[in-house]
Each structure stands twice: as C-alpha cells, then as structure tokens.
Image (cartoon, rainbow, N blue to C red; front, side, top):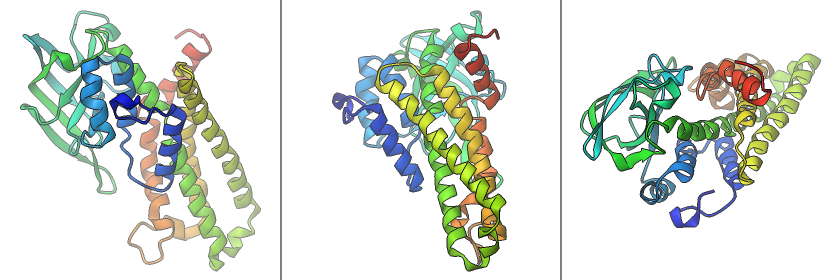
Length: 329
C-alpha cells in the first residue's frame, strides 16, 4: 500500500489488508510494526524520512519496535515521561519504555518522548525514530507465562537522536502517533488468528471419531454457528476500516469499533474452540495427543494482551463514545 517511489507496489490499502490476513491465517511471519509506523511516516514524515525508512522496511532490512508504553504511561499514554532535550542538531533521550515487542530483534524504534514538560500532556510530546544500536540503549527481556520472550523493557541514557529523525512537528508528536495507533487498531491480525483457530477446531471436531459425542451436541454446534457469524462481522468491520483508508478517510472511531470487537472475539473464539475439541484441546505443543498443533490453548492464554495493546477495550470504548457518538468525556 506504499507509493512505488518508496519501495511499495502502489497498491490500495485494502490489498495490504488482504495480504496481512492471509499471512496471519497461514501462521506465516509478518512484521506488524511496519504496518503501524510506516503509514505515519507516509502521512507525517519528511522526504528524508520517507526515503530513508520506507524502502528498507519493505525489503526487511529495517525491523521496527514500538516505544510507547511506560511504567506510568499505558492507558494514559499521553503521560509519557521519557525526556528528549535539544542539544545542537540532536536530542538527548533519557527514560524507560516497557512492553516493547521484539525490541531485542529490531534495529529501529519509533518512540514517543516529552519535549515540553510544562505543556498540557498531549501538546508536549514529540515522536522520533531511533537507531537501536545507539550508545546508551539497554534492553531487559520480559518472559511470559509460556516461557516465550517477546516483550522487553528498554532503557535510554542520554541517547543521541538527530533532529531530522523527528516524525511530525516538535511538541505535536501526539497527532502523528494517532496515525500509528489508528493503523494498529484497525489491523486484521486478531480476526485472522481467530479464524485460524476456529477452522482448526472445526477440522478436529469433524475428523476425530472419538469426538462423535461432541459432534452431536447441539450446544456445541450452536456455539460454533454463532461464532462463525461473529467472525464474519469482525472481518467486515476490519475491511470497512481498510475501505475508508483507501478512500483517504480517517477511521478513528471505526478503528476502535473494529479493535474492540476483534480482540474480545478472539478470546471467545478460543473458548468455543476448546469446548469443541474436548480434553484434547487443552494439550500444549509437545504433548502426545496434541491437536491443532497446540495453538488454541496457547493463544487463549496470550490473547488477553490484544485487548490491552493499542489502548485497552475500555479506552477504545471511550473513543467510540466521545468521538463516535459525540458524548462528553
């Protein structure tokens, strides 16, 4: 969905969503951060940033991580305290980020910093892209309950970042960051993952003879039918967002609607899939009688994170109520 002159195909955004959906459904690797920061670079970035980062992201020589959340700035993201202080042609960045996905693999980070501590929260923020090999950056792993290392804490100690690496305007980085957040919320990854687990469960239920009792259970069948309906709704909500983006519209409230519905649906889909596959469905990878590659119970334990990332369900419901329905905060 990027212009050809920056390494893209010049295809409409909806083609990008189709590609992402198929990649996730097939459990193929996908750099989700590229779909978040690069639209912000296209909309808000200088010509220098576009030429430096878009083509490299497209050919995967540039891998991104996101530096938004902090210990005291999660749902209240505008409360970021990581400081960036001007120093000649650079800024010096000091602070801490948390829940940084793939921070141990990425070679660049897009990061929110506070450049004016005296301004109202949303108006004193600047948005930068920073080389992860810069002196002064240290990374500490955060291991989840399955023993996987995906998240990290990232610490910055007077890290030097050039002024020309600012994304958007000084002290107005929040507005560029909302482009990133809207694209993060409007993705189809959660829908595609839920579809995959649903289809895996249905296949197991159809093919295993020792699950014949569950195949005749009307409650299970009706739950599966209801879930199929919900998955179609979630998919159409996601494609509605892509359609708006293709037409040059900003899907602010619509992205939040799609995000809330899809991320909460993913957990419900796993619950139905576990019920439909009986006791086998609870077995993890490596177990003798594992079904569906053990993906369903793993995802059930981890999918709650999707209801928190890119704004909790509660935050997104606030966005729907205020920006979508015009109700007071």
